Image (cartoon, rainbow, N blue to C red; front, side, top):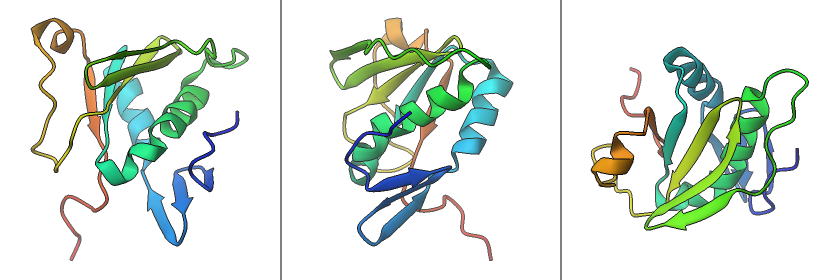
Length: 133
């Protein structure tokens, strides 16, 4: 599966653009989705990482698809407010939050109807939450 054209390249968890390289720890995301048996996952990115959002969904769909079954590529995309629903994979659907994000404490306010349906929220950032010393 080919990633979206905006990131210059990606392999495994590493996305690069220009001289910046981002390790989004997608293997940890996949493990968490499987552990929680999440069916609807909200992905939240800060503005600088939003260009990678659909490539991240492509990667997650590819890795979560059952063996021998390609990910759903029907282009199921619908926009509602700050959300894009971008495909399904192995029973997992992904929502991308397009609203502002100014750090880990800035969680989306979605409304009760959709909040009840979301099984897992994954927030991506530019830096580690707690640096290791």
